[in-house]
Image 1 (cartoon, rainbow, N blue to C red):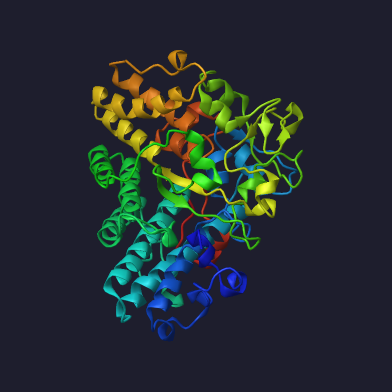
Image 2: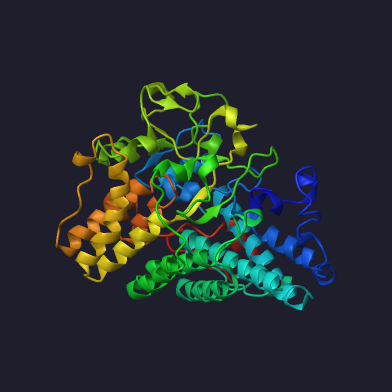
Length: 476
């Protein structure tokens, strides 16, 4: 099978597609007796990938946290998902359903990783395969914890299979959780291969582990360590920018040289597809929900000659996935293009097969530029920044007039240029709100933002009710 996420579901979903996973996920089996063979171990780690996707079965609204509170988008839709409206208007509460679902989804993934890490070492199997499986589990646990800290800040840290009577623990400070993330990435990198064969496309790799460690250090503002991990990413010799920006968002050109960590989706009518294909598609198109509409401010912030504006945003009379986009398609007259597909390419709208590009090499270059600029190494910072701009310049209708190289020698000006470049390069890739928060400028960009409160989202009330040791985040 082309995509590994597809084999992370139970056999009841995929019996007609693949025999790779023919048992139920470990959470509903006796894990003590289950782990007997290498096949058991592979199936167990496959199940650890299941919480990653934007599938309809996961109710994964990570995109809502990264996009809707930011200056990129306003909520559209028909009001049938009140939590998304709350994210747009900053009226969310601990009872907002999207937080409850996200917490449970990621801890489900963590629990599965811990089962793999505890049980697989005792399985009699090929040591190379065993190391790969353990490396995947370490990486996935690190990734799930990274997402949880992005959204909630301090969270409980579980690094072993924990009996029910020991689950009610206090939150672990975010700094300590990030130290565990980096440690898990380091271990994962020592166990994972640099790349996989086509059968295993989509599994975690050494480069993905290096990159997640780099991103964690970036959030820690540990610029030197960020650069150290980025150098490890580069040392693999595997990554580069695709000449065509859009090849990162086409079904037949995914998992390319720019892909460092890509969440796999596939169109099988079985809940493993990318539901953004429906959630972001205009309501004026059959089966579209239109729950994210592009702001005029985001559109206007682009250099009009920057081709990424047209790659990311639909406007009046643009070709739009089998129809012609019209102003009436959105209250802002502008729509999202990324992660959407023509109706003819999918069997149902909610199961798109455009992957979520969680870490692209373009972003790694922008991390490098940011870390160098923060360290005052302005001239060095220009080089990775220029690589990203040059790709877009080359795709412009008039390259000579588009995105000239940044020439400033001023540290603050280069930092601002890099931040702007992230906005254009990574628009609607679920980074913007988290960027504004980590830069400490959300309050100057978003009128509703309250410093000391909105840097993180609330711990779900259901978790507070279940665990008396949890303390709610400030302001909630």
